[in-house]
Amino acid sequence: MVGWASGPLVVEVHGQQYPVTPSLPRPDVAVAEHLPVTSGWSFTFPEPLGMEDATRAYSRDGTELVGSPYRGHRKRMQELQDGLDLAKPGIEFGPLDRPLLSRKRADVLYVDHASKEDLLAKYRDHPAENISPALVRNVDIVWPCGPLASRVGGRRFDYALASHVIEHVPDMIGWLQEVSSVLRPGGVLNLAIPFRDGTFDRKRHTTPIASLIANHIEKRTRPTAAQIFDHIAFVAPLGVEEEPHVHAALLTARKVEQSNEYLDVHCNVFTPESFVRNIQLLQDVGLTSFSVRKLFPPDAPGAYEFIVSLEKTTAT
Image (cartoon, rainbow, N blue to C red; front, side, top):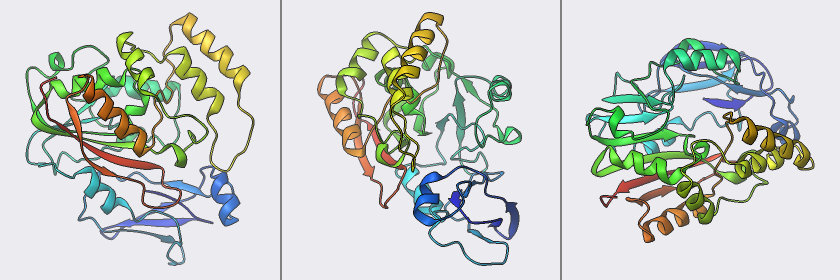
């Protein structure tokens, strides 16, 4: 649950109240709404919300928030769960401290690139905004790279979910192929993907099919120099206008390529139209078994993501 507010507020679910104090930088909101720059807030529930959960967010005096987009969880979960039978076995990628699905409500296994212990150490040494260590989930399937099928012991799943994961993947085609390899025919992969125009990627070009194919041919397991340069040079926080950081981007891209370190960036940038077009082109050349089952485009000004449902339609 995220939004913005001018002062302390209360988040409530099923009568349980949680105090929250806005502290996250939101220059875009400050400019548009004349609120403090640190008016942003984010709250992670102890358990993932379901569509039936009733939530509220309001000021300490009981006043409902106006404009702050905290009411969207039902619609978002409805879209992310579209076509899924949660009673059947599924997998969720990168849940960290805020999984989409609860084990109490779904037959789901969590997949990540590292174990829970290693993830906790990673974020202890390199703190990330809004990570709640106490809520980081146990990882059932550790998958840093290589064949995913070998990590799941021959199991097959009916669905897979990933929220804000695919943009971090250096070789998106290879990632999709590995996910497909553990899904049954007709299996569904639902993705929440950052919408370029509503995020800090707004100044960047969408990822072309040529880059996706090149990264796949090269079997990239780390971001390319081009991906690193593009991210660092052209990322532009909402509400902030500044010149591209080309000098810093060049130095960083060189350093990372020479050192072989892994720098986490948005490797891929999409709009709904560009993502769908790329999937269709990948189908045409036989590089993906997925077809676009359904697209849920951004439906409000300032929307930061879109949701797409893919279906495994061939054996690739």
